[in-house]
Image (tube, rainbow, N blue to C red):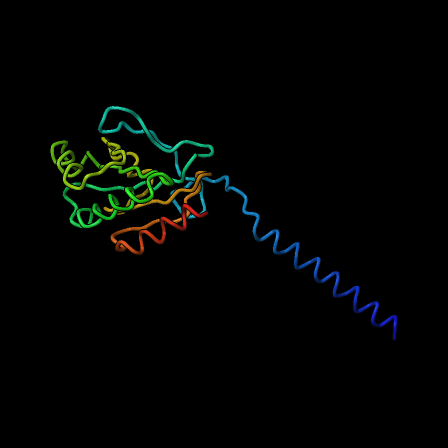
Length: 178
């Protein structure tokens, strides 16, 4: 009887060790090595001119803050509905997340872009995709489209279209807390 209890104790101990190892392995997420504009992949790198004349973009390596790359155009009605949401969320979370607004200036005009930024009080940087190259690189299907990129440069979420303020904020907070 003692041997049975000892054997049972050994089996339980080994099972516990196996479970702990599985849980530890499940929580360890390696940074992917493949690049693609898809969830779970490294975000494609780019650099664009900002409307103020500087240059910004997505580079390899760890970032201080996660970033949302939002593709928009001034003539896009859903972008007009989304703009106040982005402004409010940047006002609230801008110390913990970067937002880059990428304007498809190849389908827009500078006067309309500037008026849009002023009207919706964009405080975050606006990057100008003059040739539509970043739009193509990220395989954007339409405006607005947002990519949520973590501190390690991995695409963690994306939104195509307009999800509403609460849903956008939920996803943004999830990115920050990652």
